[in-house]
Amino acid sequence: MKRKSSKVLSTETKRKFIKKCPTCGEDIEKVYLSNGDTFITECRCIERQRELDEINKMANNKKLIIQKNKEQCGFSKRDFEDTQTKIILNKGNIDPYNKLIDYANAFNENTSIGFYLFGSPGVGKSFLSKKVMAIVLNHGFSAYITSVTKLMKDIKNEMKVYNDDTFRKCLEVDLLVIDDIGTEKPTDFDKAQMFEIINSRYENKKPIIYTSNLKIDDIKMKYDDFGRIYSRIVGSTIQLTILSPDHRIEVE
Image (cartoon, rainbow, N blue to C red):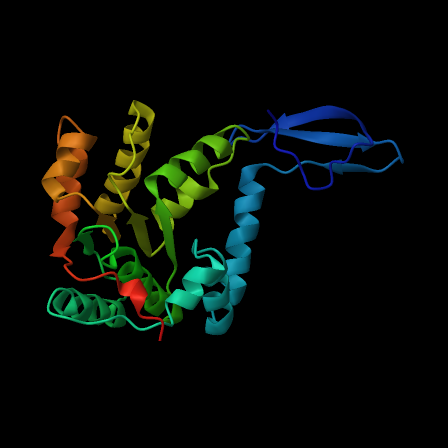
């Protein structure tokens, strides 16, 4: 399947092969429209270069960088609103809360350690990870949150159209948050994709925050027979257990 330009309409009449991109291998074609117009399709290399050019233009404009990062971070409108609400602090969550907020405020380009947040459903694991993300984003760094289920769905859908935006984003963002790991039933494909992401970030010293209802040893039993994913999670995170009532009873 060829990458389609946004200009491709129902009035397209034919395509003419021009060449293959020597870098990504995609076909570059001339498209003819019924109104007489023509245009040349773009491969992913050109699209990626355009993205890099845009990033370079924004390099000295922190406000634009923050806005762009927020648009691409995976937050819903409710997520942005929730990060402005208060959390009920008690002896079950005050220590993890303080450590996470200190971590977020000290986050920089050399930060390489993430967190594994364990606790029962409703104790505020996802809420706290989003609080961290909000601070990191406001400091001008990029961040992205997803669940394994959504991540695999997005990767598979994008593969059908020769796209790797989500996969690449997971490799490149300054902070990645994988929410509710362990709730899914991973296939061999899922495990392979997860290992590629986790291992790449491990090797490049890029942090991941995981939230889970499962203890870390249960992740090993569920996710990989050889311990490759487990060892990299353990080797790159601080494990925190959160014990508290559902934070969502506090609105403001």
